[in-house]
Length: 504
Ligand code: ZN
Image 1 (tube, rainbow, N blue to C red):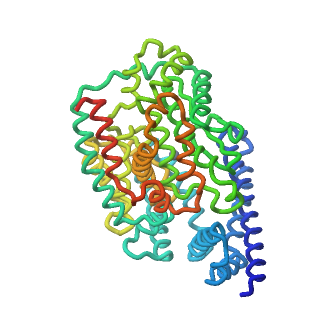
Image 2 (cartoon, rainbow, N blue to C red):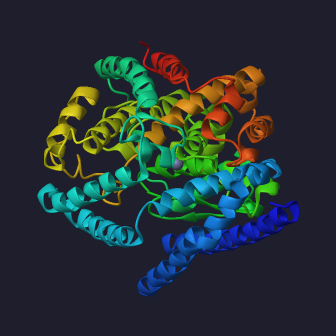
Image 3 (cartoon, rainbow, N blue to C red):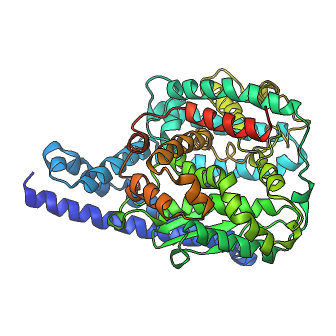
């Protein structure tokens, strides 16, 4: 292909991509609006609007023109003449294009309808703890997932292709190894803590008016370096962060009067996601690389800020006085008691309410079950029994009903198989990143204790944030730590922290 022809194709490709990004940003604003107080009576029409725009976006991404452009730009000579950003953009887009093209549109349409019905069924069945009514929906969702796996293809394990869609390059082989190492250390640690007398955390249930919680949430976001000129904070029921572009990254949190720690840590968690998106390099704006590189790396940033900084002793040495000033309800609670309370470990049944330590065990239960389901080694009908057995084995407790057990998460009804491991991968990445950051910044603890987050944010930006999706997840971790993912950083961090808190 002549160079002028390559140039013309590149320009057309960039134009199409910009159009897709515009649809994405518009959809992002609509979703944000729906989850932060859009009028209830308009929601039905809004859902149709979202459907129309999503279909347009899907058509643009899978059009024959896009296919031809990607094929032409991927040819060796043309590809080698592209800049690094454009090369990576084409590679990523081609991967997604090929994946979408392998599913016949009629099959996909049927699946979308089923998934939405299954989610509705789940919503109705969960509070009734009724697995039997939900079962046929889940059976169909699983059967579609298996069909997709065959169409997408796989090398080693059927579950690999699902993992790859959330965490590029991740496989069952790698996950079995890291989760195995994690479980070996965590199960006995959780058991040892369970032997200790429980902490008194009753003051964490004191009523704190929403207005006070909101004021502290805003204050702490500013402190950690969240830019309010490039974002905003709003209340919602299920907190999330949404990056429309680096100049508009919105966070949400949830205020519960008799559980103020909910907003406190949700805010820092979403703030961590937002710091990532606010600091992506401007040169990636308008491309498919202007986003986090994977679910796991994204989650590493929320958890690094929420748990490893936001639940650390130096952090509260700096901010507890301020929290007490803004929250007089805590006036008589000592720093030590507060620090221990926000790090309380207790085996519980609900993943979303789990502490930093046991959280990983909740994820491993789901990972093991998903793997069995996708490899035909477990039938949906036997899922509740298998769920309860795994909880007994990993956490030492058993759900009294399905609402608190197998029906608790929305993910499976919507076909989100392969997503759960991202949460634990995030914890593992975060611990490894923290170790590297401590080495690079010897004054790390003193900086946190003084509320000096600028050097920390600058280091994270340089190593992770600015690259967006220009680097793959394994390139990010190698860029940060000079090594592949290694679970011992997380187990070392957790053992050190919790042995001290629980005096083991
Ligand atoms: Zn998150």
